[in-house]
Length: 323
Ligand code: 5GP
Ligand code: MN
Image (cartoon, rainbow, N blue to C red; front, side, top):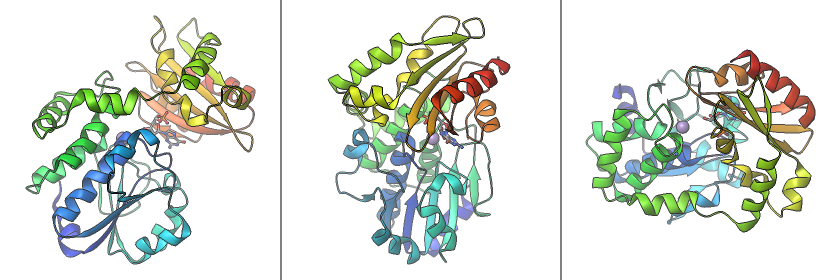
């Protein structure tokens, strides 16, 4: 599985590792772990993303190796790179502002991802949807090539698995995921510390906003679809930022009988950021794809152009159809 990727590593010296817009625990953890591995092999490597990494993942990067958000001055890393690794994404559009720079760069490109296949960025592509996370794939790559797996890389990979499996609760929590996790603990990862760093850093303001948002929960499809709405005013009044709503959608899934949970977050320019979650066979990737987004069967997202009221009608309509 890794022959071509190994060839890319061996044949090149300067690397950029990048991932999708709104980087999450898996994209950041995987990219940093791969960067560490490349450096351990004597290569030059940096991590770069179009959007800013959330504060809760900054501890993974004590050396400041991650350039995020990337500005125009940072583009030279891409234009002078021998190779660009694109992890946790396999579509140009989800790379954000640096996508175009990467597309035009002379560098060899390689993709490592666990999302359903979208489009060919490069023929050197490893997409495995059976992996719980991209971190699982990067773990496999590092160990297949004989390591080393540093403590920092292990922290990144653990964070990727933790966040993409919903703390080992989602259906993608496989025996493989647990076996890898076990090795990562052997490598020194402290699960309670990581959990606290990633999930227990909320502000009082976020908690109050969450209370408001949860109390406005709505239902459709005989209680099988639940959704939450967050307007820009609600975010501003609470003294919070849109990213503070991350994780709210999980609460919609804790209600008995709910099969699909959705959150609508009002964004600038008459756009709405939507996250969808589902149980079992209910396919929210299809729901999101029908509206121009994507993701996985049980977790997907889309950016809707229109008002929050229009978004609710369109998306809950599609969600009820997916029941
Ligand atoms: P989240 O709701 O946590 O932002 O995203 C859940 C999943 O849906 C992620 O795995 C992500 O890849 C995918 N996703 C979220 N937003 C979008 C989007 O706008 N377009 C596409 N194609 N996928 C998305
Ligand atoms: Mn992922």
